[in-house]
Image (cartoon, rainbow, N blue to C red):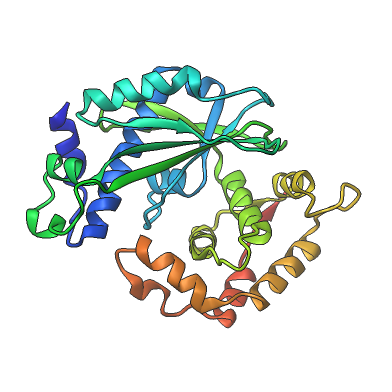
Length: 289
């Protein structure tokens, strides 16, 4: 099993501590997906979000969380049934982890849990050069957040994607137009109390550059569900473009850049970012109903 991890690590040319952390996190994320597949999790849920784009569609940035959506509403769903499968899978590859459920005081449709392990120990095990990991505290913890939407919006399709490492398996994911709709919902509606998610804007450009359209009905359903669009309002193209233009006008581009830089191997890719740039990209967005 350790040979498979070594093979996975060959994909990364780690030069900094952050490179090492990102490589370790992504290897763990993929093994988590394998464990979930073995436990038949993907018969009930689909993978989406930035990490899905990274692992399944080769998005050229690292990501933090594992985001899933149930295929059918189930307000009582939790990860308990699958936790041991994930822990056992990771242990078989030499990773010792704990999984802790996040207790929420409000009635949330999103189930959250945190997977934690020791950073330094596993960086050594996967072969990160000592010159890179020098200075990392022995007790530093690497954390992967897992979120599951238990009340999925309507109008979505799924597809199976096959991964070959650490061993062949598949995951279920939203199709590309729904993934873009989910990203646009995050970009247009995310409330971070002043914090700007540059990752959303980076992914926005990535989708548009590949000619992937936004699924209008899925985005509309998400906005209805979260109250960002009244149930009586239809999200037509004109309204969508207006909301997007307003979002760009209110964007703090420098804060967006600061957010995305730790996840990029080449920060030069965002030197062009400006409001003018995002307005130009927005004009190229394709929409399907």
